[in-house]
Amino acid sequence: MSKAGNKSEGADRVVSMEQSLCTVISNAEVMTGTYLMWLAAPGIAGSAQPGQFVTVRCADLVLRRPLSIHQSSSLMRGAPAGGEIALLYRIAGKGTLWLSQREAGEKLDVLGPAGRGFAVPTVAPHPSGATTTAAPVGVQGNRHQKPEGLLLAAGGVGIAPLVFLLQTVLEACAEQATPRCRLTLIHGASTAAQLHPFVRDQSSPFTAGALLPGSNRSRPSDLPEGVRFIPVTEDGSAGRKGLLTDVLPDFLGDADRVYACGPLDMYRTMAEMSAALRGAGEAQQSVKLRQCQVSLEVRMGCGFGACYSCTIKTRKGLRQVCRDGPVFQLDDIIWQEVKI
Ligand SMILES: Cc1cc2nc3c(=O)[nH]c(=O)nc-3n(C[C@H](O)[C@H](O)[C@H](O)COP(=O)(O)OP(=O)(O)OC[C@H]3O[C@@H](n4cnc5c(N)ncnc54)[C@H](O)[C@@H]3O)c2cc1C
Ligand code: FES
Image (cartoon, rainbow, N blue to C red; front, side, top):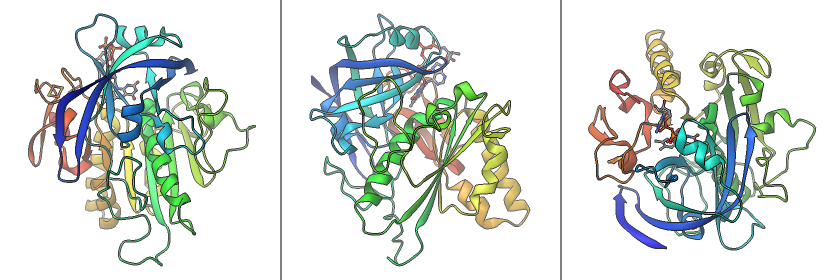
């Protein structure tokens, strides 16, 4: 294990990455063409923040492949000591295909945690001692305000980092006497088979509290109690029919903060929707969308700020997605200029 020596310095925190040979604990197809892999990664699990990613060396491919951290055992009560992370990845090409063929016991070269993640509303200190930037859940200057509404919008495999975000917020809420957050997760997919299995597994009662790795790691954890789940499929085979962005406006009114991860088209539509709402005099809803924190997936070279291949134009100037992101505010990005 070695420290990569690349530090991403943000206004809020300093992120230190390390390169490790991580043992594959399990690797199984959980949705058609999408795999869930658990890795023993003590250094990364202990310091990762939701929205951060790792880069994985795949076979002899020159460029490492970036993948969001989907879960970390450091936030799970009762999790085995040592520290594990989960990745949820869709087979897109040769790197992810190679990954899908890895078996328990094999070692992977992993570098992370990388980038800046979501500003997480939490009152609980992270096990690593890292602090957070956003105001605590439900506090905002008045501890007696109604619980804060967090709306998470996941397009396809964009669910990956949002589950880690859920996990973090739930853990913070669990430490408080009264619930201080209301969580809504919208998950859009083309068809039922592409929805995260916790949608289709209605026979299983959702577990309360933290997400545990559980005895059966070949399937994703159930959604915890207290999370309102809204499945959306394009073909109407499960949940509401349409695109995620068709149903998003129905839930904006109840939201105080919005987080999203999904394809470029989804973000472009959200940006257009924000402008349309402003034009229609719905200033509050428009602002919620404009301030939405989005995780951007662009093609990356090095993954740690050295090659500039991930540079995008934002309203604040040029930014490197791997170092300054991958999480940005929706309104900061000049969407017409972003190419994947
Ligand atoms: C910060 C970040 C986090 C990511 N997290 C996840 C995740 O949690 N789960 C997941 O399934 N995928 C995630 N991705 C996308 C993932 O990195 C790519 O799918 C992967 O690198 C493709 O590698 P490949 O060798 O399998 O495919 P390649 O042969 O390299 O490419 C196959 C196809 O995928 C497209 N592609 C390649 N790289 C990217 C990319 N970075 N973003 C979008 N499309 C790409 C190519 O244009 C091509 O059409 C993330 C990307 C970034 C930048
Ligand atoms: S991928 Fe090399 S600078 Fe971002």
